[in-house]
Image 1 (cartoon, rainbow, N blue to C red):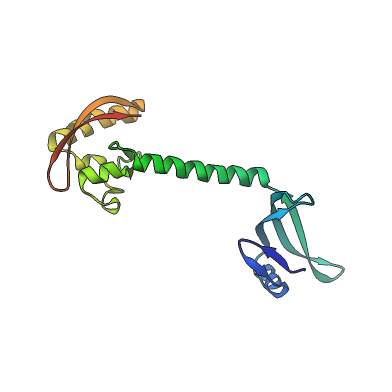
Image 2: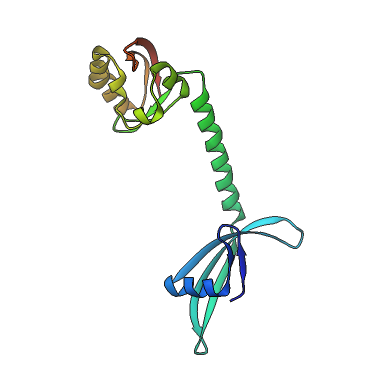
Length: 173
């Protein structure tokens, strides 16, 4: 086994490879390399121990994963851009899961409502509504939303951490 340079793991010496291969049946690594033209590409290296002519040896398979890796990088960049747009929009936004729990809120939502992010994630969305709005949400709006996948122009009255009431027109998708 030759010494290899793997960006995600640093330098791996021959002894390290042997120890890693003895403890694991198969080792997967991802490397960024350059071809003869100097163009960068991604490769996945799969290494396993084998016996060859009664001696311990390693078998490695390399394949180009540039298309997949570039798609993953683009997806992360897109998610980051969307997350930034969502969180920093000047609108009061929140998203819920199928249990009705908040999974994300915009910074404007946090500012208006007076909460910190760790105080609201995982809390049922209707917990921030007045008694009347909560009843309307749990008995009418949310069942309809879960059944049809959308609802329009729902006037909810939210209660901030300091007890202020805000009438917010609600549009869900």
